[in-house]
Length: 403
Ligand SMILES: Nc1nc2c(ncn2[C@@H]2O[C@H](COP(=O)(O)OP(=O)(O)OP(=O)(O)O)[C@@H](O)[C@H]2O)c(=O)[nH]1
Ligand SMILES: [Mg+2]
Image (cartoon, rainbow, N blue to C red; front, top):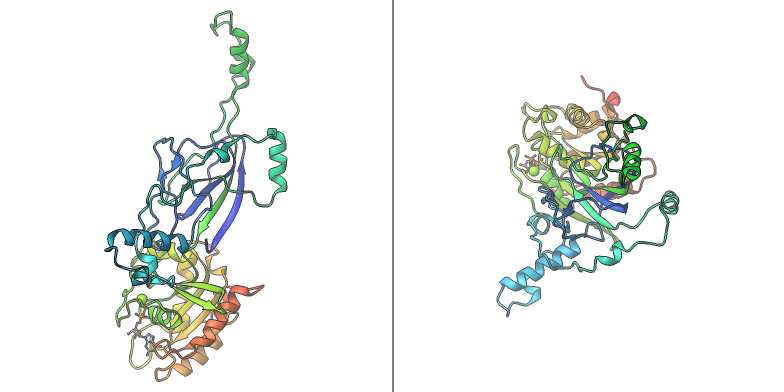
């Protein structure tokens, strides 16, 4: 699928506790199968709710998603199939093919899983023993950059969720245990003593951790900055727009296509306020989604203090946003970033834009009027350049001149 960052890890020896962000999918490359199985393979990303994917009860069915995460293709396919069943048979396929763009409407509907849909049950071949000794297998693993994913183990959907993906071994008791007090029948004493003193080996697994991103670009800004307006100017998505804070309560996704092949997904995320990292506003829910985008586009309202409004000047908006993101997760604002200076059409906004350029350096700034789509073509190019840039910059808090 789109926007996946992968990290391969190996575990050996005792249990290891790794903290992974919500939205991480764990795939097994090699090793022992864990005792739980994935109930529902993920085939689409609802940007807001990640469907529960882990069946904690030790179920022996082993559904898996060999391809990892399927993109919209599969989702669309299956949703079409579902609709086909519910619509009268005279309804042609073109009658409901509106979800051709990966925009808000097509992504936001919840996909239900049809147990037999798309997934073959010929699991066996994935679990056939290979003619490799364990030693050889380990060496091979170190050589290979990326191994084939055998099995999707779990999708972490809740904060603090814990799963044991590899069990630690039992410690040996040592020679001290071979004393008179170990009462064993003569027959299997030898065996039993050996087992007690050496312990038992732990299981071993090689995993790929995959953090699902909801989009390539996240539009980050205070409420009312014009994020939703901008998304609708950039793409065919039609999010709700209104002249009050917290219009957007769920992320909306729009697709930007360039030159037929490149498609960049942009997420319009609910407005962020000061204290969001302490869960003010809808804080954590918003931040969680920003976490899952690769590129940050800060949308600043140039007109917030103009014409008698009692808002926050754009450079302070930027500082507040950066502080919130960093409080939530250190290093987050190092992501490739650009600034959209919105509402350039308002009286006095030009001067604010000049002031903003003076006070914030190191990241590109695009003056835009989202309502009239002015500056939007340049922004589109800017976003693409940012995706391609070899040394993209984040916003450096110490370089914002405030006050
Ligand atoms: N003058 C002017 N107004 C704009 C521009 N872009 C957006 N607006 C207005 O700003 C208000 C807020 O726009 P939204 O797009 O809903 O803002 P948002 O950032 O999505 O707001 P939340 O969803 O509450 O976080 C609306 O009244 C828009 O019409 C612009 O370029 N110029
Ligand atoms: Mg909005």
